[in-house]
Image (tube, rainbow, N blue to C red; front, side):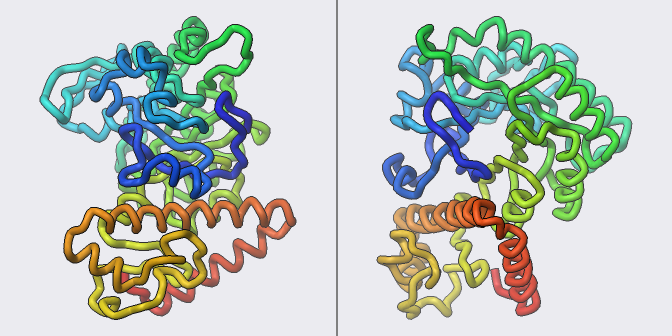
Length: 370
């Protein structure tokens, strides 16, 4: 996948850098870990420091000193999560800031303006993220709203895409606007949403409205029933998933792009993802453990530090704990996806998938502590 800020090998996992930062990890270390593309959040950057200021400073790449690709979401999921602080209408969403209670209004058009101002390589159409559970009538109304907003998003984007901060008339590279499929957990609504979104025409498509409280088996079923309705020759992006074993499954199903806060959020709570399963570094059994966090991992954290030291940092509240835990978890996720890409090139993806499934089943049988 070619972007204005470099090529991205797919399938790819995108770390989440909500406020133009992957919490605790400076950009040079993200580069060292092999991050090709990361995600920023329009809603949060709109509130602080403001999309207008970021535009004046040359766009979010310059602002955060990151020369590789960036994707921004439209803010729809964050507005959805405000719950009692929002009011949805055909025109857009009225919401109150979670910071100071100030009132704001997002429309498909203003979401495009904000993302054009930020200047990410890939931006997302404005959608309504359907809650779970939602009955069929609610899911259908929400899906249809998203379809109408997708058309408005594209129309506004096409009229203003030349306004991106780093735009150069001599350079044909531009932002890419992706559409988003909704429809709750109803396969026929997902199929209709996909059909209507593809008819509008986007260079890439996302499956949204997942990881909103539905059981994990339903997440898989929705992805599985939606993918066949999306063009196989364009990037297919599942938003907000998942555990390491799940991203392997989804990549094998044909998903090209995934993002999730799980590796970074879990790290800040002392949960490490390893080849031996999930490891709760707070556990007293690691107090004198001189082994690396993951004996099979070659990241700089595992090459240098011990489980005993990581536990000490975490239990004493040292800020370095979150930094080291996050770096390792990101390395694990990125290495997992690197293994998938390697297996695809060798024609051995089914073998990797079988291995991952067997390892996960064995750990589940052992009731690996988390």
